[in-house]
Image (cartoon, rainbow, N blue to C red):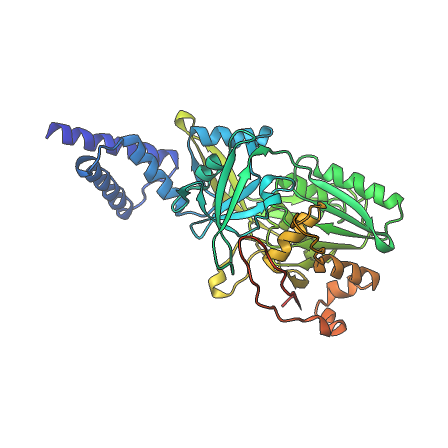
Length: 451
């Protein structure tokens, strides 16, 4: 009896510590009753479960369960996961090049990184990772998935993927490599149309984009296509600095709002824009998230750019890292981003027909498989090395070029519906696509406008 009481005291102490760590203060009898129920369950497990359990494992499991009820971006990180997170932000690492998250409890690809094993293999945004090697990802945290996919360069990992509209699961055997990313690319297209693609927002992004804009301007650029497709975001300051290149000084770029009033902050442009007059078209898709959505939404709110492509991902939340004891840490959502118009870009309830993220002015829907081929094609990589498959047409880019050549950017910014009036024959019904594990066949596209 003494041992049972001692165990109960131990669990009570543990949960008091947990509650203090996450700053959850009991404010009602209901809170106390809930904590008492959790303690009772842990005590029953410790006493009666078929195998011996470790108290620390039960506590960590309970913490993970609590955090998972919040949102897909909040996470409890044990000491190993916390160290790996810091390693990723400080330097390179061995891996396959996937940005992932939990979406509706399922491990989901946000986007593959450019020039990585996952990128060349053809893994796409919104692919569902079912297995990592032989281990099911059911109830797996994104941190655990990251640990399983990382490893020494040259070693392999097998991913089992479920893809929307695919009849069978797709198997990808990936050889890990040292992940280093080239984030900016430029070129001059026909009729002196400048093109810049940014694949990630880091500390150098604004400076790199500014340099490329200067180079294109020297070559007499008359308009710019800013490609943020499959850009998962990055540093908030970088998105603000890039907006400074295009919109006037002292303009609100984004606001953060949370329960704590101290977290409410407004971010403004601080410099006169060096490229205030250049016509701009921004390209986005379902792989565009976070900082990409801030830049796109802000430019759209100020009617500074025409947005073309697919709906963006819808990640508009602010996370902070809170160090805990024993080297652990808690990544927790503390605020949401709000654009100058007051709208938020957070993922909404798609089951009720509410779209997430940024809705383009001209919506050009591209099938996931076609989008994947375009993604690789942009790096001059053959989609199928065994044959001479023709290049896939980039209808999103072609639409941007067509609008610029027609000199109708400002007209469509102010009246997106006018696009369909000018190009009514471009609405095409999607065709059924056939997919197998060896080849991804082309599908049709559908062009509509913002509603």
